[in-house]
Length: 74
Image (cartoon, rainbow, N blue to C red; front, side, top):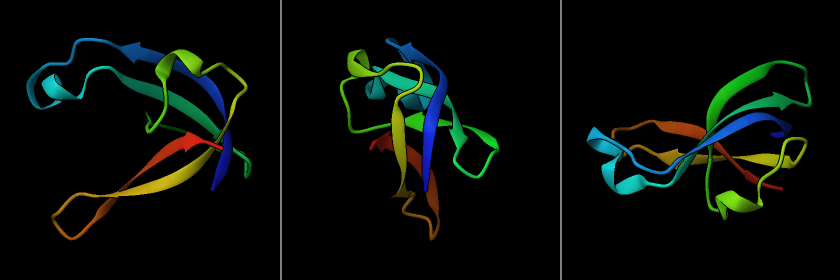
């Protein structure tokens, strides 16, 4: 459940379902186990993020019987 920010982008103006979610962070996270995953970084000030920063996994309930993994600063 831990990893490092490999790359990220802050989206300040969303469209469609993401219109009210701005700003949001889209990122590649390099997991401690090796693989890189494309995900969001949540529950943080986007301006405080930096490449190489440590993150941990959190799960967000979709309300449809499943959960999406996202990351938050560790």
